Image (cartoon, rainbow, N blue to C red):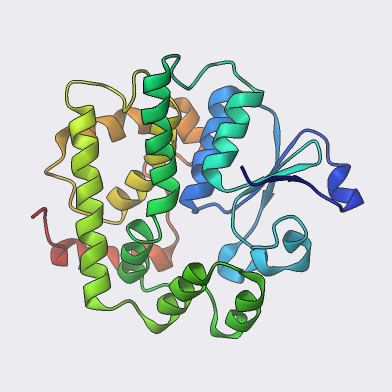
Length: 267
């Protein structure tokens, strides 16, 4: 787990839960959702990723990779959204949001880790292609290369600037369909992904919500759509993410009408 005690005195001195996050980041959304489900008191440090706030020196002292979100819990820094979910579930076990049975816990971890690991090849390329946005500004890429030790992440952000190819976008669409089909199988005859409502649902809700809001063709997945509507109606979802429908900024809304007609359906 990427957990460390900061060497910075002011970060060490932070008491309680401090979340550094972005409003429309799916990774941030799932952490906010779990905090609300647990009824925890937390301090919000909202960053504007479109202005590259996460490359500011103040945030880099918390997370040198610049990735969002990051949690500081009594001076301990936890990064990566899936690991933050595990940390909060372990430290604040009530209400319990992970299965009791070890076999179900293993399945839950598969879903949670997949939600975090798959979005660079599924949600993100498609999302940026649809909205015409970029993850980084050209003038910030050199600094980002110096900060980020993962070459795959550097390459991803450079491709975002250069523009994803049609083949990459088609691959992302296919991957999204494959995951939705897997979810459909798990949710057919069951209300939640693994047993009762829990970490697996919390991890995947923001991903599927963003796909749905941006017009991804989900009509072939009735169980997923039912699950999404149920998860979206929870009071915690409204407080953590926004009221229905989620209010998206104009730069995200403008391309949606065009792409809804152009998107391929399943298969």
